[in-house]
Image (tube, rainbow, N blue to C red; front, side):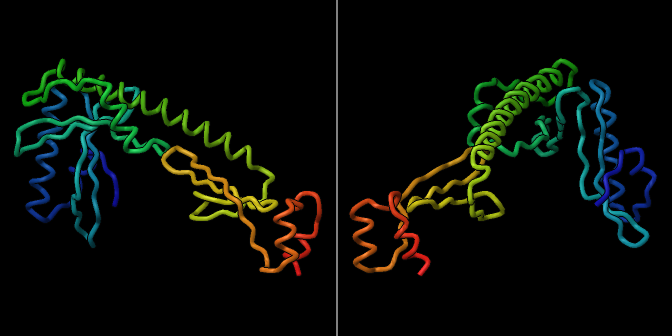
Length: 217
């Protein structure tokens, strides 16, 4: 798939009538939005031999904070606005909770500059709050990873989780949605012998090296 500006896409060869009509609809929407607020239109296109296929198009309202899309729902005859950004360390639950803190403007059926600006501010406010939360979570993860440097970590699941086993104690953790979940448990993998039992029962693991010798034998 290739991303083209609307002006570039209009120069391509679309043999299919449906594709040409779809592109003209993108042009019509673009011109209508620009009457009230500047926007860029991006067309996602695939090439098939000598012809092109328009997969979809997106209108982006120009601003200095974040990518904001505006889409027209022809069935309900309403415009929809939303930020087009992803946050690696913010869960869907956190996004929902943060979004609730902001009051959405009224739905838009007929465009005006004032209505568009209200929706831009709404999306910018949510985006900035999510960005701050993402940075906070990122810092916490970075601090955790710094804290386990030098430890003998066994990693799993593409470095999303890991474990450290030392002196019969197992520390496990998982990094997901910006959170680090941690757990500690007793972990003795020893032979079922009287000698191993005595070492465990007498709590001599840290005072003697006999248990290590047993494990290695």
